[in-house]
Each structure stands twice: as C-alpha cells, then as structure tokens.
Image 1 (cartoon, one colour):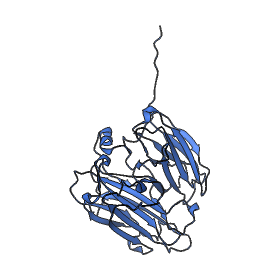
Image 2: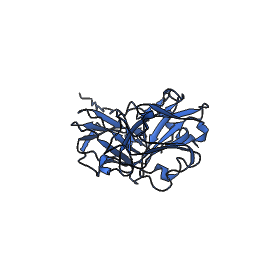
Image 3: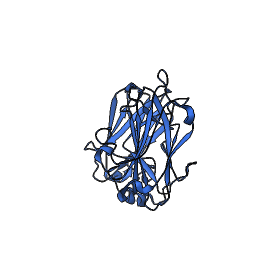
Length: 317
C-alpha cells in the first residue's frame, strides 16, 4: 500500500475524516447480511471490514459511531421476519492491519488479527433504530502503529451472524461521543465493500482505489450488479471506459491497464444507474496484477481524479 505520509503530501492540504460511506462516494449505506441469507441479495461473504487511520499527533480519545446498527425497522432489508443478529468488533494492536489475512478481499484465516478492544452484537431491538450508537472512548494508541499508513490503525469488523436479513448502516470516526466531529488528518479505507446503490435512474456512485508504485493493471470485481447500469472508470489519463455488468448472484470483472501517469493516483470507479431497481446491494473488490487486494479510501488520495485533457499544439509556417 502507498505510504500515507507521502499521500498527505500529495494532497497538499489537511484531511478531515468523513462519514463511511463518504460524501464523495455518493451512496448512503453499507450492507451486511446475516450468514443464512441468499448470496443473490448482494453480500458474497457476510463480513465487512473497515480500517480507520488516526494521526500520531492526535492525543485525545476517538469514537467510532454507527448509525442504525440494529437489524430491524424501516431501514434494513427483511426476508420474512427480522430474526437476525449483527456483530460489530474493534481490533487494534500488533497485526490488526499488518496481518495479510486482514488485507484480503475474502474473510478467511486470521482476519480478526490483533487485540479485541470492544464488541457489541445487535438484533431486532429498536433502541438504536434510526439512531447512533457510539463505541469508545478509544485511545488512538490502542491501534496498530503504522506511521507509513498515517499513524494508528484500528480495524472495525462487522459480521452477519444468525438469520437471513440485511443490515444497512453507516459510520463516523469522531472526536465526540455525542456528535459527528471530524478527526483532523483521519481517513478510512477497506479492501472490499458491500453497499446499497441508490434507486434513482441516472444517479452515479463512486469508489476510489489508489494505484501505488509497480501496479501495471487492476481488475474491478463486482458481485450481483443485476445488469441495472454501467461501470465507468475515470483517471487523470483516461476520460472514461464504460462496461456493462450483466450479473445476478455472480461476479463480473473489468480490467484496466495502468499507464505511467496513473501511478500514485486514485481511480474513480463509477456505478451509473440506468433504471430503477429496489434494494440493489453490490459487493466490490479491486486487485492488482498479482491478485492482491488494492485499498480504496473514503477520502480519495490526491482528491477525486479528473481527466487531464492533453492538447498538442504544433507550429506551422
């Protein structure tokens, strides 16, 4: 992974943490189904892992806030009746991120590496339906110290336990227990997403993988897009390549060859809705030429990529 200390220099400005999903990503909720759910609903493995990076300069406690963590009520996706449970767990310490199993796109092996800091399981109880639940206070130094990745890294693992329903939620890394107050210099990233696409035709959602040194190709792997739109990739060197994804309950792959100008920049992977489809959840992960997962960031490194038009001017007599 590209060193975040260098990335902050690339940004050239102070970074503030944002909601997860972020404003730039333009989708509202992450989705985690319980383990008895049919995978055709869009969640391929019933686990979601997000990493939060907190600068070493931050000496005050932080909080991870979750909106609507229960699995019942109006927001979540019911299959017959709400009978499911979702577990939220925070890990820090040695190996929380550096363990290779934690960086994979499949939750296998020791992906719960590190030291368990806090955990809570939610069911259909409506106490936190449409409300925020706060984990913390958490001492940032309880995370895994990785200066190359921006400071202390915490791992947040969300698991679908019993049942077959879908839990929709969002998160915020905050300086406050009772409000969403950004942590200066913070960011979050993951290696796979499962999220709910907006229903409005023409609406575009985004994810922002970062292309580090020695990457010559990336593969965008999308599960259960339902043939309801197109996938478009925009970089500083390419105006936009469009692909359809005619899948339901299966994976599709889009490959993008990386050119020199795209090294150490973000890619804008766009999901453009063509028609209205309700409750469309998709899973996405992105790999390099070695089939290693590439991280994508809620705050795109270097900013949202914009195609740089090249105009050749030749002098004539």
